Length: 284
Image (cartoon, rainbow, N blue to C red):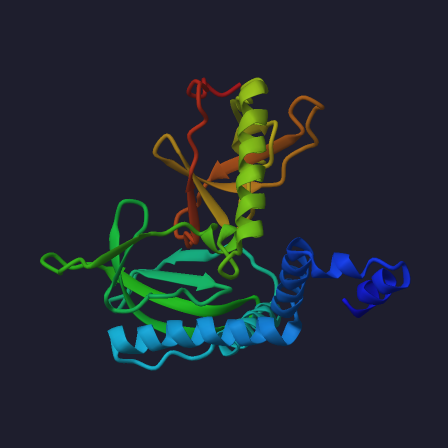
């Protein structure tokens, strides 16, 4: 403002300084400069936050902390979750064992603690309800062991959790932010569109008789969890997974299944239902 006045005086245009429009414009510029000053913005923030905290204390009769402390606590919590996730190691599918014991009927080995799994929780596994007995410490990579028994008749069911051994792999590691949620939704949408345009990938199921097994399954996509620990249920028959031969370019994944021998412990049971695939024919 001083520089503009000196220039006007140097040019002999002192009368322009008395113009009301000039005064009004300079006043608006000075007000904007004051409002946009960092100290002014900080004071305005304290006024707004103080009014919000006063209203919160008046309505709830509880003290509300300042926003910077909440932000710092949120950042520290996210860092703690990241450190704890790294300390537990990689995520692997759970191992489920059916146990014939008078104390419990199911034992689950998992790499992450299951939130809410206590005596109030009811677990739904393969159309059977179980109650959680206790949690125990395990060994790497399954750090936690849960013992469950069948829910007795007449027991009050409060919370039912539909259990999936793969949920620990696909589950959320921490509460996602908006960008993570947006990225996940976009990825799911692209996957759905890709599957709609692709031709249906039906498995080829063949029955045979040999030392390697009784059932051969050729698939275009890998089957998660199909290993030596898994038990496959197909047409009311239990099978164990063996090593298969190399596949073809059209069906690169081949699995050989043999009938489960008597007395073998069933850990993870997977129900196999290939869509559109007929039942296996007689052995060849």
